Amino acid sequence: MVNPSPSPNTAASSSAGLPLDSVSGPAPAGVDPNLVPIETVEELTALARAMAARPVLLMADEVMAGLSSGEVDDILALLGSLNAQGVTIIMIEHIMRAVMRFSERLVVLDAGEKIAEGTPEAIVNNAAVERAYLGE
Image (tube, rainbow, N blue to C red; front, side, top):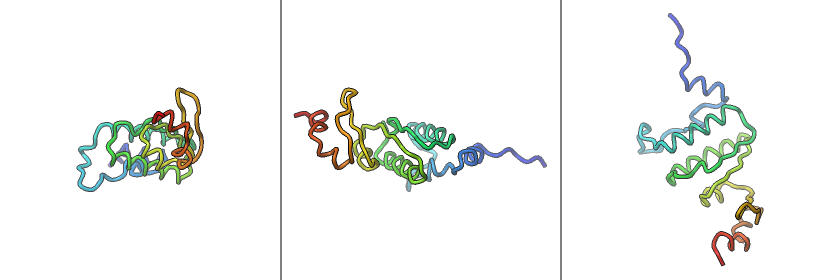
């Protein structure tokens, strides 16, 4: 009998050094895993492709745009897990809930100029950030 070739999931898992579940995870309770929104599939596919290279630095550029609140939570959990494994994450994101929950340090830009840098707590209370993003 001929041994079948490994499934794509097995091959991807062994080449990336981590199981694909660590990228996709199980479907949330009560959600049919066959009905995952295409945006989520696309983001997870891009993230799995990036992780296959075993990076020490990962740039997450607007990876949560268009996702539901639950999907944002799932991506944050995944990025947190990757960070705990030693991957440095640079996040470019406009979803402030995600930015504030995930980040250890922030750099804030306004029209391409750096206007603030610091911890999430310091940025929330920064007058230049308030003026730029909330108005005077």
